[in-house]
Each structure stands twice: as C-alpha cells, then as structure tokens.
Length: 112
Length: 111
Image (cartoon, rainbow over all chains, first blue to last red; front, side):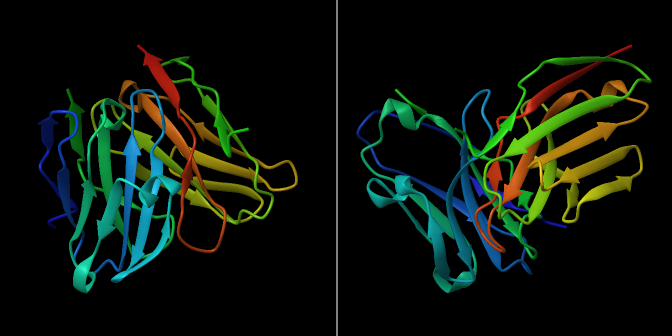
C-alpha cells in the first residue's frame, strides 16, 4: 500500500521564486485534489481533477497558482512569484468516491 | 459567513466520557457530510461520513445529521487519550468535487 506521496516534504524559498510540488495519488484513484492548510485552519480547497480533467478550481488558481495532471496520473502544483502569504502546508489527496479523501503527508512551504 | 462552522475549542473531555462536537453549514443543498481527524503535525484522515438524516454509528463514533437545521454532529463515546486531535467537519455542497472543511475542533482527552 503506497498511499499518496508528495514531494518535496519541505521547501524553503525566497520571495519571488517559483516552486513546484508533485503528488502521486493512490494508483486506482481517479480523483485528485489540492488543498492548502495554515495553522489553526481547516484545509482550503485549491483544485480538483477527475482523471486528467481539471473540473473545479479556487479563484486562487487564476493567477500565480497553476496545477496540472497530465495523463491522469501524478499532478503538479506550481506557485509563481511566491509571496510570504503563500507559506502553508500544501496537501494532496486522492479518492475513488467524492468526499472520501486520502491525504498525503503534505509539502510544507516556507517563503522568506 | 463561513460555509462550514465549528467551535475551535479546545474541548476538554475526561477519559471515558462522551465528547460532543458540532458543525453547521450554510449551503442548504449539501448532500454529503464527513468527519476527519487530524493529529498534530499529521494529515487529515477520514473517520466517518453520513448522507441521511438521523444517526450513524461506527464503533465508538456516532454521526448525527439534521438537514432541516443544517447541523451535523459527532459523538465520541468512552473517550481515550488517543482521541486527542482536531476533528474537521467537511461538507460536499454538490454531488461531486469540492469538499469544504471547517476550521476544526480541538479535543483534549485528559486521563
């Protein structure tokens, strides 16, 4: 059981740099989600894929954030021109059924 | 108004007692409701889901749903120190996709 894996687990970057996170979902799961979580808050929805189609995305993904899921397998989340407010845990999850999400361990981003 | 609201806690519960967690949601058309548990420094994990009005029991956990009042709750019976965690209420407004989370209620079970 490989679970959902995310890479890197930690990323420290300087303001203005671009960062990319990768997520490998559970192999038979066709749904993939990206969330962002800050201390004391619940996960905040970023985007959702069913297979390779990006079906829904937060307004956050309209500018500096972009996500892809080529061929319906792994996914990447890119943040361009990072800001200090982007510092958070970025969580990827996959599922077979809506709402029943399996989360990865997350990628923690620190923007200096 | 947040779409999913929970009391942040902490909710302090003596070992062996019942912990009662509450959640309200704003979208009256929501169909599916979930409870996730998140240990400190870890990712959320699904513990229960409920779709119909009434109660649903799974071991020491009972989820309760009242769609008319837009209210969902989680009871933890015979609370154990290992139940100390943040409990996240999540709502699926449509039949698919965007799961909306509340901010979570921190539960502390004291021996």
